[in-house]
Image (cartoon, rainbow, N blue to C red; front, side):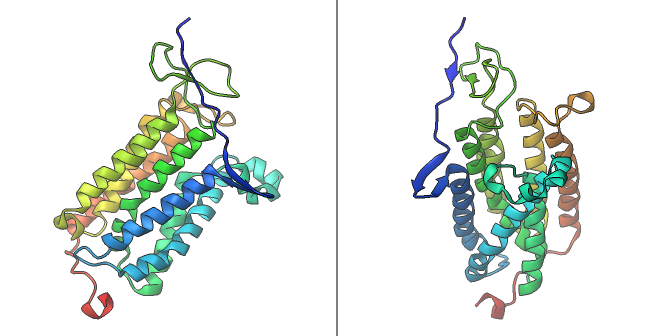
Length: 277
């Protein structure tokens, strides 16, 4: 039998502070949001300016609530509605895991809508800058999934050099799909969006970068789902597709429509001078 990699026995808890346990999963969310906001403070000042660095700082609380509430409610509604309806108290047990990216995306969109309305910002222009940094959090989140030994991949050929045996499985080598997702949904998508955002002719078209993100994420997720084991309580749908792939299709369609709309709408001039100061 060919030797395969064994999953490193990471402790999902980074440090214990008395009764308080700081988990890698929570740290990934915090790191992704904090680092992303620091980059956002610079992005919003690129011409055409869409906000001030101070407003980008203020958005930290809004986006955190959007990610946590949207991600949890998305998991409840999209993946296990029956189970949570039977035990509604479990909806609030976020420390037990269970977050949906698609739900988190909806939560962030709602947060951006409310934030832009509150401070009279152009929604699509601001969304372009925000979606550029979203892959940072996605990448950290997938690495945390790997450390937790969860959301593992499908069976892999034992000859694959990185095929791995994960804990709590049947002992067969599998794809480390969390790493695939970290590299595609995280690193690759971030580099594509960062390069695109450096072109002012694209920044001048509100909605283009946000649409590019939706298309890029949807394609990356559909690809990675081909290697990821679907949730046991859902399994496969018709033609072998998964819930993650189904939810990604409307994202791609919305992204294409946004990109087309961006080049039909007027060029954005940016914030008035008095709002930049």
